[in-house]
Length: 304
Image 1 (cartoon, one colour):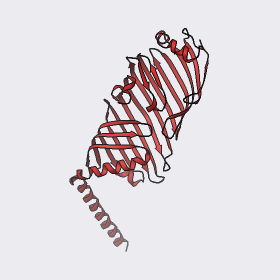
Image 2 (cartoon, helix red, strand yellow):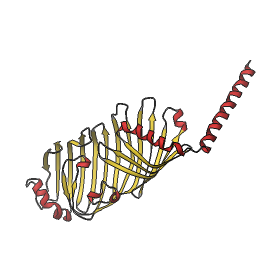
Image 3 (tube, one colour):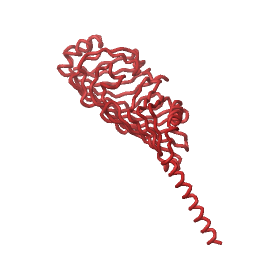
Image 4 (cartoon, helix red, strand yellow):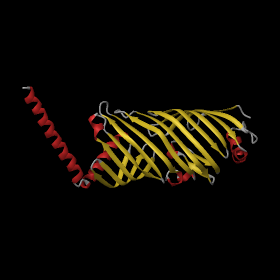
């Protein structure tokens, strides 16, 4: 009886192995490109409820790999978008067996690289997106051109978690190296969530790092460290966003130390903005912002 059972199991395994082999061979031999557009539409459709708009140019499909000449990713609520060239998405079959199918992605953008992975946890229907970026040229991003910025943007160890009810959590770590801003420009901050226009002076050089966490519409543990030819700035605080990811409320504390170039470029502006609390001779000060983004309570202190 046990021998017969063992032989039966062996035969079943052989049949299963043959079936798997046939499927694998089929995947690698059948022309799958005719399904590429359909796969592209499915990906776009599944991304829409997450607040992400994705479109593909010239999609191609082969065994376990989906690619496109261009992949456009946009977040309509925040008006932020990115275009990835030579985008490649690769599925991991083993992860699907563990009820958390994973797709790795990579590509080129603005003379730099972007990569990461998307995991869908079937057990609780959550999505996790992990991503990296290296040396993205700020001057080539259409939404940053208005700032007149030069420099290389990198993103490290950043991730986003999206729940079935579309609540979200994320952690971000951004830095810009070798930055500069050759000319003074007026910049409308509306696309970035701030409802006003500012005039930004020319900056010979700067480096900046930005870290923080997002829980639904609340950015917390925000830290910004800026070193530049105009001075150094350190900022900590929190931001509250609207449903359209516009900044509604702020709670920020800044420490500023100006260089001679900074005093010359910013002195008069700071005197006017502070209502005379800061002077043209001021080299260091601290300032806090608390309240509605369009009209927060501002407090200057530790002025030197």
